[in-house]
Length: 183
Image (cartoon, rainbow, N blue to C red):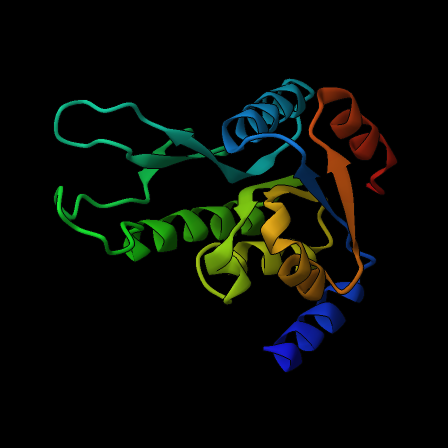
C-alpha cells in the first residue's frame, strides 16, 4: 500500500491540489456542515460535485440505512444493504458505492467548481469506495472537502502526500478554508 500511496501523492501534487479534511465532530455533524456548505456554494452559482451522507431512521424494514445524496442532481443513493437481523457481515453495498462514485465522476467531467465527498473512510483507505472521486478531483485540480475520522488520519495523509489541510468542524473554519482555496 505504501507504493500506491506514494504514487497517489505524486499524482495529486501536479496541480497544487489541496484537500480540506474536517475533524472534531460526529459524522452527522460533519455531514450537516458539508450539506450546508454545498448549499451556500450552490447559492453563489457554483457547480458542486459530490455526495453527502445521510442516515435514515428505521422504517420497519430498513434500519440504519445509509444514503448518499448527490449534490449535483439531488438523487439519493443507498449504500447499505439489509443482510438480516442476525448478520455480522459488512452491510455496505459495493454497487451503491460504485453508483455514488460514478455520479461524482460524471459531475466532475461535466464541469465542477468544488467537490465534496462525504468522508475518507476505511474503504477509501484501501483504494475502494469513493477513492476514484477523490482522485478525479485531484487530477482536475478542484478544491475538495471531506470528513476524516481521527483513526484514519494516517492513511489519509499517505493518500494526500501532505497536500491536505485539517479543518476544525465548524462553519467558520470551513469558510476560512474555502476563502483560502485557489480558484
